[in-house]
Length: 191
Image (tube, rainbow, N blue to C red):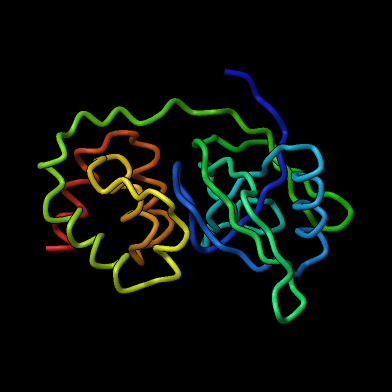
């Protein structure tokens, strides 16, 4: 798979493939990143922050991120730029560099999609509990035109995004690239 350099947007939250996220953009480096991505019809990589990593050595950004594209934008009432992004696929980030304005970029290599051979009934009751969350949080439900509650991969990714577990734990599951251990872990947490 080819390697391409993309801007990095590190956050404490994470976006996974087929996920959606609403963001408020205010730092000049990220405003520039969004403008450039929209002008060139490209995306950027959403990365999780590593609380134990050295920022000066760019080790504060976990290695696996998600390539994301802007799907909607608006000026918010407070004058900030509001965007909605959609996650496309996982990438491995290497060779991080810092530009003059502080925007980080990295060499990003696309990772193959998860092989998840679970049947929809194997993710019960996680699918029903996720429907409840979407029903209770209108702002979350509004991000998705067509939720895929019957798709095990989609359900597992949404839970991994939503659960307040350490970024290193999330990275562990992303590195394993196998959904059965994630299913077992999530089932224990959600039960």
